[in-house]
Length: 285
Image: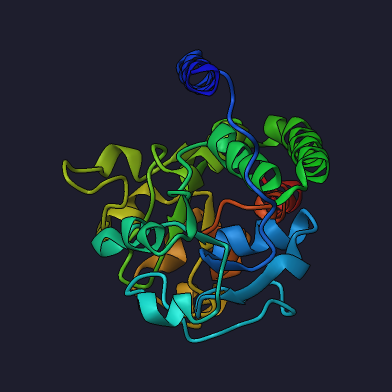
């Protein structure tokens, strides 16, 4: 009888603790991470979790020492992912219920959607630090990023007053508005994005502009985020019909930014901000 009573008391205690909201024991630090997110890959290596990464997707081209594979983050193959025996999978998308399927196999999954703003980007880096056991280093990285970006912006903002910018995703003139993460980089400096006035419902912040519109707006700065995919340069832009009259072409203020830097929200955000600050510093007004 005493054993029965003791058993009931233990069961009651377990139930009480479980319902009290007390935090569960922390999950084990992962040692076999698969990253299906190029941004997460960069962040993982930047915070010192690189040795824990066993595979990255086919779009993760930075850093070079990352264990590159043919895995796809867009059309993921669960069997191929599971073949790496991961104890954590990080992805920026959840196509076809990828997360639920992996979790059924006992694999932890962290989905980090595209950040909408700087705070969101910093939060993702800290989340990766927390789950991988590198929170102190992740915290230092975020602090450094904030300090560097603030310094670049403070120094360059006075030169940005009254200037306009056009961010080119491709020669077909798809671009970004200020509602996107990339657009917020320009907002930091106080630059006016010419895409904002031409945005249409349903574009998701990524409208396609006409050449006539861009030329008529004559942006002071043109940022080319299609130098790798589409071999765009100051020379190719200047050769476009009518573009010789664009202010950025006249002053040579055409910024070439690596496509991957311009499309991710990880540690190399600083590189992006630095490139814009550099263009402002050399702008002839």
